[in-house]
Length: 179
Image (cartoon, rainbow, N blue to C red; front, side, top):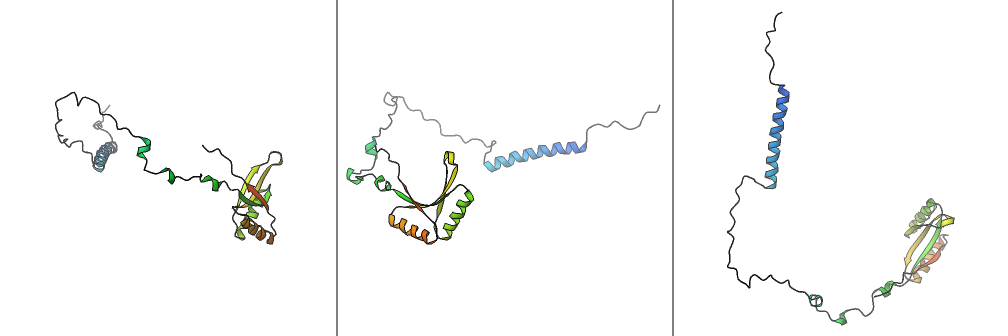
């Protein structure tokens, strides 16, 4: 038998070698760009800082510094008690608000239709959805809030002219205890 005169193949694939070299060069470039972008230079010699100052130790300097004390009433600006309001501002907010309920529907599409009809009249309405237990879910269409009864009467007359019956609903704010 004759032996083949081909030399044995050593090394590896030139494609694999090229990929490894490309990865190594890419990694080195990525680290270099990252260091350049952040301004960090690990090869820069650190500038020598000032030598630590050694002072003679005395008993007075060994005492820890006391933290400043603050008095709450001294920190506040100087305002007299006359500048504070005599009554809480919630007295004006405790006034009842009035709404006109234009309808209550079990079908949400009917409530949306009435809201759109009110929008064409120039009134902004809100749909409130509530679960009434045995009776099901109701979608209430309300116009408001109104703070004065004259506004309520004007809006109610406009609704009546357009054949929309409205019911007055009074919303009392929650009474909370004052400290």
